[in-house]
Length: 255
Image (cartoon, rainbow, N blue to C red; front, side, top):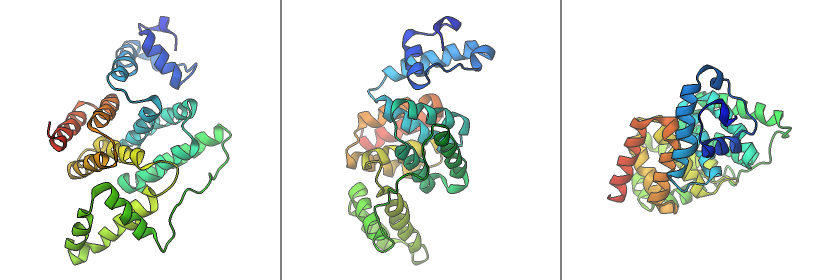
């Protein structure tokens, strides 16, 4: 993208070029006014409004795109991720973890798209295994990580679950946390930020957003980080979901 094509700030050009070097946007030809508005905002102003680093920002946008079913934008950001040093394993871990929150019916298209882009970049598939559990210990390991993230109240929740729903509590420990969260490739702080990003992007997940805001705080992601991530997602999720997320952050952090 060249600045002279449309009225873009130097920072917007620089930040866009960092993600997509020498990329020629078709929208510049058809909608130059919109590109000027959006890029000056999303790739200049919004980026300066928090201290989130580029790699984390891109990874959270990828998770957000999956949650929204935004395949075209996701593919753009997979290419951006590879350009700025996000590893293939990190990309795959974002996709794998999203299954627990978004569902495989939606995620499968993103998995195939990721594979196609990786092959285009001469990345050999399959990647190295990242599993850190066995069929025998996945529930125990998952439950241990749930307690680290949400505290001992998890035991009470499991105990008080109706008998005909205790299998869901088992699945949360063994599958959601045991199969996905314990995996190598991403640390717990990034995984919780990803979950937060996906939940606020989906909408209709108020209870889960509250729980994972507290989970983020428990694993070391503070209020500033959560607001920063929400700010960086604003161009991709819109104002209503952004304001809802900020309201819940204020509620949980008592501000």
